Image (cartoon, rainbow, N blue to C red; front, top):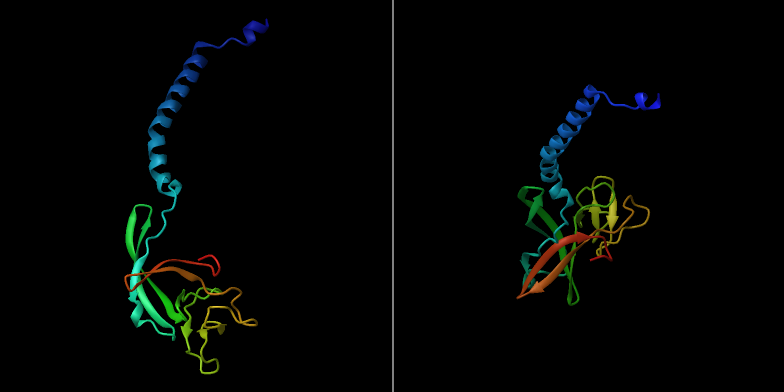
Length: 168
């Protein structure tokens, strides 16, 4: 009696077989599409190349805003993204700071607030940074300005990716 209960009818067998074959064929068609969609996400991020932005001779001890463009790749879309940096000399070294405020992402300006001279000022929420990019305690930013990777070659300043201070 128990053998009769576990027997598979012809209709059930055909149903199982067709479902299995159909699932196998669907997986075979969908896998290349899924791979195509996920491949850019799973690909390891490439390190951004350093781009020339200024002549070292033109850089002074007063921070200057330098605008430049980087090549950016988002999945299959390649574009030029405009960037800027506050660049100045500190002794023999060059400092390149990101102008993006660490509070809410507004753009900071150098020496634009008459009440706080020789400081970076964020007009959105009155954030303040020292000349070296350190955030002033008691103002909205909770972290220093990011610092660009940089290199000097043949009298030119090359900038890379902005990283948190201490990480560049």
